[in-house]
Length: 558
Image 1 (tube, rainbow, N blue to C red):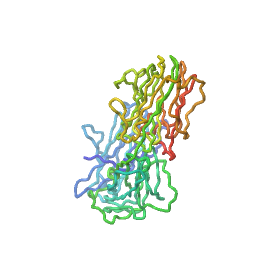
Image 2: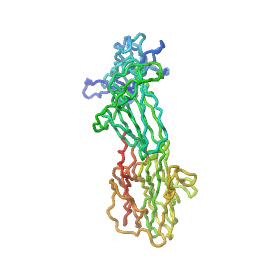
Image 3: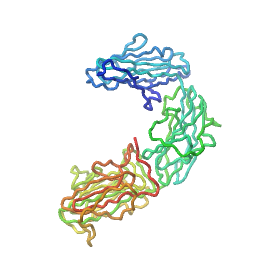
Image 4: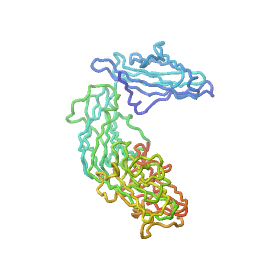
């Protein structure tokens, strides 16, 4: 038996039990929760009807789980001749018994989960409808009922796969020959086209009946197309309303998601924005040379898996990963607050193959005579040969993970405190960024400039360079664009210095460490803003974000 749910349920459109007034105003009201509607397929080619799962649960009551007792009644009188209903059970435990043409289901303890298998009744007509109502009783509480509408048949929209060019160059565009079919038993009264592009790709045309939402690295466009899209027919975009997709100057590895939904079943979000009026409307017409149906006629859109497709692009582009030198000056027992940086100078944005992968690493080699007394959580201590260490402070080397994606012109700041235990003239370490190598990061294949992947970290450089302790100025992070930093980051020293980090909004600089968010999350935005690291008796200047001339896209919202 194949477990299926309605598209409404898959999209999270659930119905709460209708409001009821408790017999005692002090008693809690516990609603039953489940889908508002369930669509059933007609039998195919004289076969048996395929069952659909109807899942109903009780909102968690305040009473402890062991003391809960409840009786639930499933009224099937309004689906007689339309659907058959039975309790779903995969083992010996049964909650329900048949009574008066319906079901009575007794529960002790929590959670309460009514699982019913529903199928089209023999001889039920295409378009027949009915209702299943569930009521409940439990001592000391009122349970509000739930009604689920049952429908037989319906539209089943199927998005056909597009043959697109995968390998592109920045600025190159190509048409989107969208084709979809209705493989169901009823017409779709309007459809919604869904087009989702990652950061490096964009749609060329805009239409009055389309709306847009950008969340993190994904921009989604929904286009409401009017019309009756009848069963068995195949449709394509009308000739006067084409769609093209273009690789932007920031493109590298990107993707396109494209789908079709019955009107009302499209993805929901609160932050859709309209485009300026263009005077053009995106439309669809019957395909001139429709390919044969890829699946037999079946009922309503119970399989969202064939509504969407995805295509991956690769654009011939580069991204320059770089770091900056650090020069410090101090006396024995001074603690120096500084920061090591990773920067993507673009032009491409880069994401890892898998969301859990770390795209790159920054390796810090500590200069002789210095000991790390504070480091961000993204940086792990290792010995000189790369062996992991249990003790995280005082290591000779640190490996800092980046995350799974990095925008063009993005900078990541890793704050450190270094204590001078021994004064060594010209003590030299390094900071290197790149791909994961056996012993040291190596330049990525897309990085054309290996010269700026490694920079020197020097304490008490010969010749007297470096920053002396000085009074601390007012330093803070800035969310606004600012000039590129000088090639060296300096720090002041004091016998007992501390530092803090703060940031604003934007996509330029990510400060790592403390309670700041880690970079590269695929379910949320990178923490952004310039970092201000303030040391007692001195100050650290941390370069603020480096922004390109083009505006950055907004942070990801859930």
